[in-house]
Length: 195
Image (cartoon, rainbow, N blue to C red; front, side, top):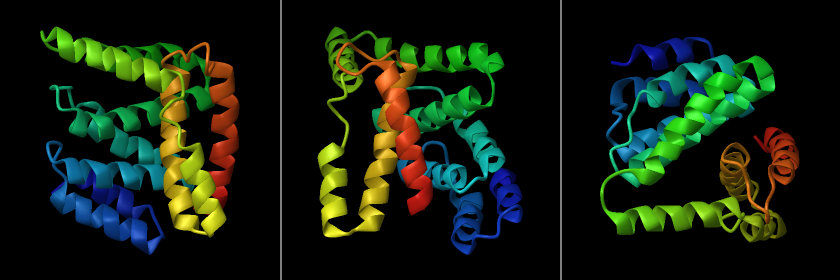
């Protein structure tokens, strides 16, 4: 049983979040993709609902996971690391060293292993993401037009994490960090209204 989730559940009043935290206290395993996805979903909702301290407690569980080449597992860890960077950057500029250490950990994953083809693919994926090619503008617009608030919320959360990626990894000529920061702030406000 994982006590972090139990501790977080005791600090909440939202029944769905409590239920998820209690479930994860029994099922969480850092090697199971589905449980990492559920964990990331919980900490994301905690953050956007104003439970930053609880989100950071859960991030502590994920930040100790080391990259082993499995991108499906790492995706959820990386998202939580970017959220931690965002939280730290919003709190104080005195956290710059800790943020840089997290960014360095993420950057190291792009040179993982000895397979040059995999490294080249990783480099190309990173470049596309930094140019904003993975952003979900059309998906958000479609969800808005159909009036599907839950779908819009989900796409906006992914959009938020993609923007964090761009912002903390330096952006590109096509999508600068200033542009990412502006979009992050706007999107965060919208998400808080939807959640």
